[in-house]
Length: 360
Image 1 (cartoon, rainbow, N blue to C red):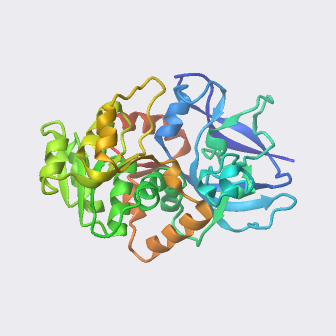
Image 2 (cartoon, one colour):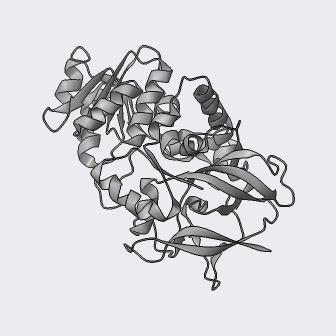
Image 3 (tube, rainbow, N blue to C red):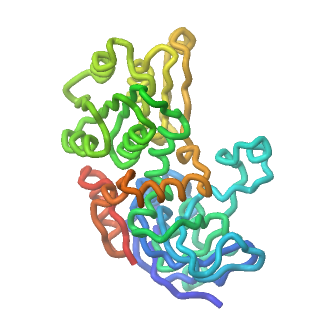
């Protein structure tokens, strides 16, 4: 049996998305059917629409989502119908070399649903990050469903991608220690999540860097103790001045451009850590003096999905949210309908929102 549902589809590179009726099959072995309650509009979805991730059109967009399990296939035991879940794109296999060496957050063979969702004419859809959650229902591998206590879906779903990337960059990848100084370059949703993560970790000084004073003001609400407008001020000099002339213990690049990475590299203290969480484009190149890489020591790290393990991290972060220690609601700028996703992409360019969230 197939379920007819409305969904956001990107049919061709650069073309506006459309809301169409698609067919979602009942779950097979190892799969789960999820009734989506909310899904954030992430830059990754825009990258799919622009053909920056692949050319396997048509894409079924959406991946930053929460909802309720409606049905499960044979062999599924971790979730049951009625469970409230956050969807994740790292359903660990437990067998690859990363999993076997005890680092499942690097799993190299993550699971997706085997069956395909399709347009009504039978054309197969490629779901964004193996999820495809700008849809009233979606089919995923059961391991992509992380059960958490029932909370506001609009807030919880954001842990499925962008917020987890930022929080995890600070909490998992760096990881930030109590009393350290942290600088975050780029104060969009991911950067602000990194700031919130640094505060949770007990950082003594958190420096937010951006070119937009509106974003810098908002960064202060997430825990930034100092702000630097890099349009007017050299951020390396400013970060050093704010850290006794030494540089920050941890610098997180939430932009992902060669210029910002170089700033992060030179703004860190000796033996400090740089974390790249902003996603570069394929054409970008980086040039650094090798002697400085050696002489400054420390670590240069990339953060993949915040180096998270969803089964470990999502419930912990939801608990912090319920305790009032992590304000996930503050990341939800607006709630929108399914047919407003294209407008939400436009708002990304103007910096008007941290997150637009589709509510079903």
